[in-house]
Amino acid sequence: MTSLVESLRAAGCVFAEEEAELLTGAAADADHLAELLARRVGGEPLEHVVGWAEFCGLRMEVGAGAFVPRRRTEFLVQEAVVLARPGAVVLDLCCGVGALGAAVAAQLVGGVELHAADIDPAALAYARRNVAPYGGRVWEGDLYAALPSSLRGRVDVLVVNAPYVPTEEIGLMPAEAREHEPLVSLDGGADGLDVHRRVAAGALPWLAPGGRLLIETSARQSPSTASALASAGLAVRAVTSEELYATVVIGTA
Image (cartoon, rainbow, N blue to C red; front, side):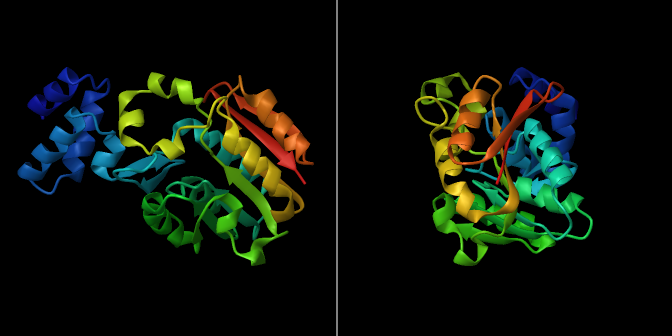
């Protein structure tokens, strides 16, 4: 274990001891452990290497080529759970590995009707497994085009963690994100809000009366995200968690 920790520390891993334990737990044998260590030292995200990410106290399956759920996004889940009722129709749009929808469903006593959609088939392979315990259904396609018409006008809670990093700022992200996560899950266009505007513009026909759209953004971008939701006909408010450095804009139909 000591040499494992030293190798991780030399590679710049701040939490080398914790990572060593996770790698050891994921390894089938010594050879497999050496392989996992080499991948991590080579710069792969720890979650890709061990095959899961902790999110809202749950293990979400992830792997190579998938966006890793961020801890700050747990704030969006907290807000969604407060607004949802048992049996609500919940849609996780731009779902990636389906972490948001699965976490909301896990916390609502009485269950929900869960749907998740994304354009990335690699991410959806993980999403199917992550939402399965909650009876979730997965749809592949570009935003609302992925959805069955039967969902139109029925969505009570629409949770979205769409990309919102401006294109020119991708190069400032940590290497393990920009080199190992799909660009489509990071790049939000010139000002970072291209996908936010598309999500907002198409939301109203899918929301139930009183339905909510919750979308993660940054504090700096929140006025523009809020403006996009307001322009789409939603009543808008923004909430912030100083603890998680997270901002969520909420639009109500």
